[in-house]
Image (cartoon, rainbow, N blue to C red; front, side):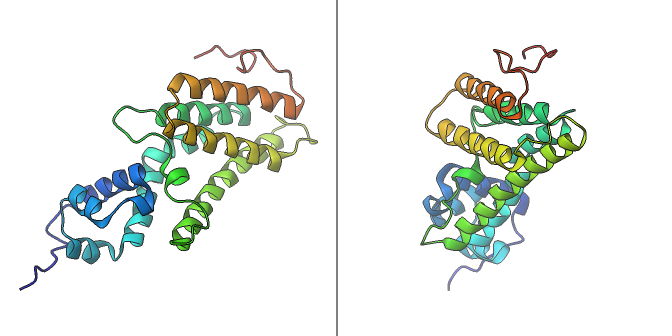
Amino acid sequence: MAERGRPRNFDRAQALQKAMEVFWSKGYEGASLADLTVAMGINSPSLYGAFGSKEELFREAVGLYRDTEGGSARRALQAAATAREGVQAMLLTSAERFTVSGRPPGCMIVLGAPSGCTNHASVGDFLGDTRRDMQSCILARMNAGAAQGELPASADLKGLAAFYTTVLHGMSIQARDGATRKTLQAVARQAMCAWDALTGHHVPPSGVPPGRARS
């Protein structure tokens, strides 16, 4: 007699955490059902009974990632006193989070699946929407800064948000390819020099805002 799934006989939150780690490391397509069930400590019927499908499990795992590991950059962006400080904090926080020992390098949302992938288009589109949501958050922070007079009226905020989103995503790819924390921190600081040039502000040699000490 076939073994029946027992979705309530395991810790669902813990299993989801383990699934997140597998997807983060291997990506959606690279994570096999065997990889997932072994890491989660359950069988296939239990996985389907608790999460519905591999794609639904992945979507939940991405949600968990955004709320935990992947949320630090967004929180740093929003918590800073100014838009410039927020973007710099976002990048430097990401340099740290992308290179944490014992965790997969880079960002799960950037590296989980390419946008428009033919085999799993809905997954690629889902991650694309999630990445665009981060760009919208960056733009919203810049708009708030502009409303406070931090940025000149002539600044191209949409272009600026797209630029820093590209830097953020590029740092994730660099981390996956082996870039060190020091290298990513240097990228972040150089990117802040572009902020000053693009908005017409004075650019300090270090990329650190005037009046702020280097960390």
